[in-house]
Length: 282
Length: 292
Image (cartoon, rainbow over all chains, first blue to last red; front, side):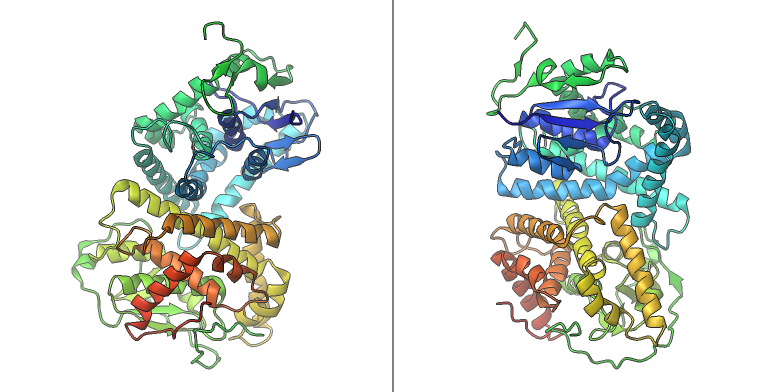
């Protein structure tokens, strides 16, 4: 058997297994490829590190950053993409680049830079999961990091004012959402009937935007108008995260670990019928 | 030791360039719709493209961007004159080269230029449906995300290249100590950006691997077709050509970058095809490249 894989990541809320995009990407991919991940949710004790989350730990390795984690999982033979053609693999890379360039700045802005959202939702949520006194420092640092990233990548002249940068990044994000919606069309996943890496990335970026309740919601409103993307997120949540959501909604903050391997849907590696261990009805 | 692209011949002596102020109305050109007056004016004969000095100053990434714009305009059959100025970067409305001066509009970077040209009634991607347009935009982002960032990394974060090539070239038109100050300032800016997007901790090997992945994706997407969207070239073809051709024909401290591209024969054929069709046949610009 493969060495146990432990993922440490930010926890969930609002019906999601995690509110952090990158953590969600890794969790979704693990579900799609059938990798048995033990998820350690970061909480406000001093266990574990908080930098560079999500982090995958095995007996010999520590891997951070979603792209590297996904590569590592693929090398361990948990591959969600092996039914894709070469061209679809190329399309995956291209669409991921599109997400990172066009959608990510706006998502970062909605969560971390927009004052109403940050102070009423994001900061309290993260601060409650970070031990004191780090909880006073870390959210602020994450917010500055997000603003920095937005300004350095998109804030070049002639957009000198933050308001103009904001207008531009939201315009780009809406265009990106429209493009994704066109590309998805009426199919269940982006490449046919089985989910792949691209589905994991799109889900990871869109689901928090879709579900988290914010005061300032212009991008969320736009997303809700694209019904096929909303349906896509809901489908994945219902099919792959239903049982673990039950575990999350009643999880006590003191409960440290949730074992995805047992309490949730497991996909057989050949991707035939999903096998649910705990459901008597199947 | 200086960065000599085989296909480009230096024609301009290094000197202090006078600051040419080209303003009538600077156009931000980002997602704005253009007024009717723009659409009504035909493309003038004296449209010019500004870039840095070819032989002595221009760097890999800027060269790639400039070539992409030139290729795009050639594909649209729009005449453009290339003018080299040492301070092109500072003249540009967005700080990036190349920029074009058309009528009384100044537009920089490929994205806004494509939109500007579209407002004038010329477009290469009109024949594509929505899904294909989404794909085209996605692949353009892939090239910008991976190839362009890798070029910037190699130029400004790899110590060997920085010391031997980049600093000398970047500051070449200016006297001491300005040449050093400007080069260090630019290096600091680029490194800050790399750190913000997570490339600060990457090693050169990881960057080259990313380039390989990107080329593999492009090669698989291109397949055996002449252009990315079969028969007709689009702005994606122009962008890919600009970057790949520049990588192939620019001499750096080591050949690793161009070797990564040379692994894919259909990409080589693609570059050759565009070069033949749009540059040699029209008798402009580069002399033929030796790709093998």
